[in-house]
Length: 100
Image (cartoon, rainbow, N blue to C red):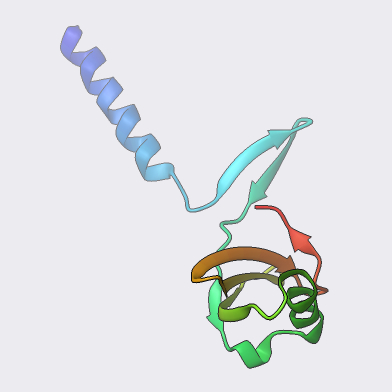
């Protein structure tokens, strides 16, 4: 009997590990929502919208954008070189800052 319980516990644990997807699910008011992983892909600095460049200059001065990433939601992840440090900031395509 003890072996049956142990075997079923191992089987359930293995099945739950297998069923884990790359998407996170949560319940909100009884409705299941899927939150997609925020996979940012690198893009060229030349492909950054003008509104984002203006927002960086306005808020960070002449900070240098070292790397730019974009996800499927048109959100941008910017690595800025400021005072010999690298800061990461997030913005939407209109230059509005996002807290992450």
